[in-house]
Length: 314
Image (cartoon, rainbow, N blue to C red):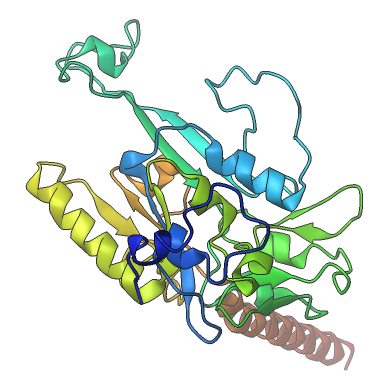
């Protein structure tokens, strides 16, 4: 249920608060957080400005250290990728557009060298995060039950139960989960589980200045995303679509849908997202059947050879 933030804002006119505001998410995110409902992120990449406020807020709230301090040479992308210590990562993708006169000696030039409208950005930016899949492959592969679904329909790792086997790392089709070399445990975004229990909006969504990251109930977010896509299409951005909503790219291979989904304007691979993610568990039965067939074939071949050798001796 979406609530207008101004409905309660005048109840808290002070600039300094000595206690946590009850249900603060109503003020900051326009939503009341209640156990038993489905919550997630809607990330609209068309309004992301690459400020990295989400990264900073995530690291500060979760007390996560910096990764590989220094310059990567990849624009402002100093973090590089999601990791055990980086649960939010802003992708900087420079768009290239091939021209008719491009050749091997004269390769495709950047968008600034063609007839693109003046002041139009040549960059795609996306704040990437754990997708909190409805059918979570990481949770299915965990042998200890360290990964579980919360009362808010999000996926969290219990560090005291994780044994560091790494099965969740290989099972995740998005390459999100990572092992921390210091403690040997799996780590990823928790969708600020501790904040949700306190009635607080996740830190990244609260810090986003353009509302590129929107937090709320999934049903409300799906409606917002559909409306936004229609609006962009009306403005001429016909390439806009949602990734991870039901029956959309990203909701393939029995994933059903992603609790953290995106609005994109280019193919998924441009954003380092798989075009058609699948659940590894769907491949267990066919792989087992193939293994049994192989064993049966080898046994049959051995039996034939043994019978032929016996006949020759007789």
